[in-house]
Amino acid sequence: MLLAFACLCTLIGVFVLARPLAGARVEAPAPHRRLVALVSLSPLLVFAGVPMIHLLAPLWAARRSRDSDPGLCGASLALLNFQITWTLFTVVALLLCAALVGVIMLPVLLALQLGATLRGARQAWLGREVRYPLSLDLIR
Image (cartoon, rainbow, N blue to C red; front, side):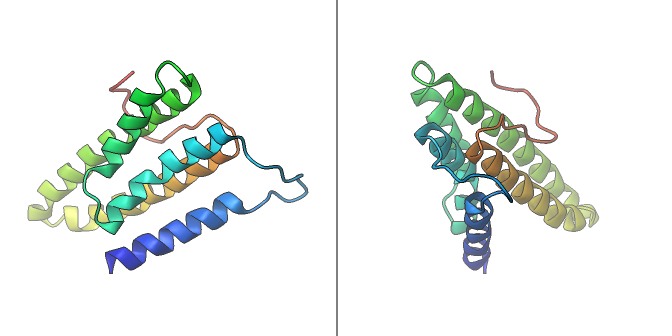
């Protein structure tokens, strides 16, 4: 069930990223923007059963591009901060499941995280600065 959901979300993300803007001239994105978009979509692999990829992929990309590509490094660190923040939110929601409040919070958190991840990937694909909501600035 989760794998089907992850595939559906990935397809939605691909269609959102590949859709041209109305009235805009379509041009191939730069390799830098493609890589940033792929790193931004990497947290979706958690739904396919790859553990900790939502933290490891942006960390790897930030380490590899620290000196060579500051744009990719900045986008990767923003994604890493976002994923750490939302992982903390999820842990708190899991703890609140004992009080039945977390049962409501978990699907809401999942939907918000999924939407923010797809939105960030789309912004990266279009070459804009990626900003994630409710993200703590933990790693610089």
